[in-house]
Length: 189
Length: 203
Image 1 (spheres, chains in turn cyan, blue):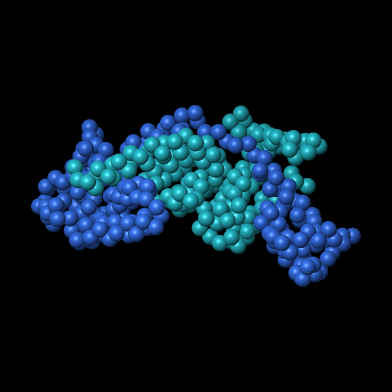
Image 2 (image 1 turned 90 degrees about the horizontal axis):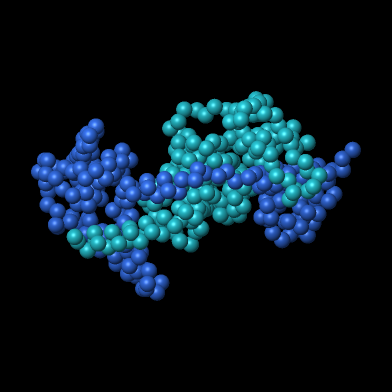
């Protein structure tokens, strides 16, 4: 075995160990983002797996000064956009349709806000309705909203993940929120 | 009747409703600083329209922030890790990891210089043609790592074919140039490396 083979094998073993730990540490958070991007468990599962596999293949390219999760989200968004290009057009769901869940159709149940924002837990129904609204957003807007409002990333971090300027992040977020407000207007008046 | 502030100056910054509403998401995210932030705050106090806009977008942000995390299947991490076993890491990525790990212990200045030398040496090794690999005749089996070095050398590699077989599957794949730039060839070669199949190269 040549020196280069030995060295690369050792490096790969070292990276593999570190990467396995990252899988354990980050897969739940990554899955949540994947779910919010895709809107369903099956696709979120696939997207999370594909993201980690691709991240592992190019782990040597990962810049350690960036949080691993943010690098992962960048890969995830690229894979997701690639999926959308290759797949047939997604079915657009209307907010006027009844909410279909595994337990059957339900009606919207708004939370009681009288106890203040911190005390509110969103019902499953409202969660489904908000997910349906997210699903209708263009993917760039959707990802910006997910990363900012659900994951709590700063504009600078989002711009790194999405590979765009902070001004573009600002615009995508603003337009995304306004579209969400339109979709969810009956429930926020 | 709603009060409307069309335009006003605060701290030398001119603010009108249009400008405030274009910045309002950044304002509620705490992404504006200094005078700009103060000017918007001042404007919101006197403008009902903009204040309503602020409140409604804030409600959207807060509600999405309260969505419960979706939990994956219990075995997701294990399934990911088991998939990694079959993942082929490209040679240039492995080489990069090896160089990075080797020089990780050195101070930064030395690392940068040494990494440059390593890159040049690596390029010479690959571009100059790996002297340990001589051209093969059709059908001669070569190892996957050797094939990678061929493949990395670019278009001058004329043709390579990967073959592997299992109980119910046979792959024969031909690539004309730069095969590692093709996703499908990489996938097939991954399969070859996992199954212990052979790479056949020809000049």
